[in-house]
Image (cartoon, rainbow, N blue to C red; front, side, top):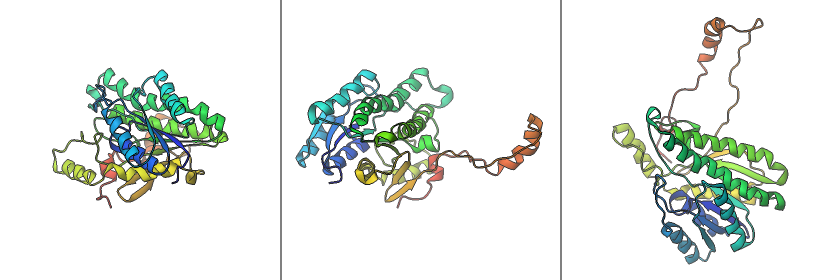
Length: 302
């Protein structure tokens, strides 16, 4: 019961990874606010059934849960989501920013609406809900944020400029929260999940390579990501903040973060020509390859 007495908000917890995190947190003793609007993968529609199903499972197992169906993509709604925790359980200790949509499109065909809608739910939504909870975390001098990022942002992927940008932006948001709120004993970390879920079901499976990648993903259920989320939200992780983790089947990864990896110096300064002649050859061997997540994680999950 690592979360005994704590109250958790899990956005997008009507299904998939969010539901599994909500269930695991309830099983660990937390009271859970299930936030989900029941929209399609692309963000259209509204249905309370997914949230009700998550709540029913939690209550069947003896846990406590409340439902909020406001979209994270609006500032006023974020206040309502946090207020739901306060109204039902009197406090808030944990925020898991998991809600998301997909509008995949090759970059040169991506519309402004496809860009803005994804950025709004993933990045703006993570800021809105985190910011709404931050005031309460600051006053009680405790709290934990777990933000769901993606290897699409950390490494790269085709046709996901909007999603990748939002997910990498969430990493910077998490780091900023960790730095700004350390004085209040508030922690902020990122989790990049590997799982076959609604969010990954749109991955193409046409070529042999694509089919092999999807086959690997299908072996990994969304529940494999929940233990790490519970740990990061618990007091056992009180000294862990500003980090990026990834669970993959039975593997756990800690991701590197941007740091200088090579330098060259010219006492007389640089000209474009000198950069081409001297700096480029010196740095080229340290260039990061243009890879996708599937290229980096190419082995079968273990």
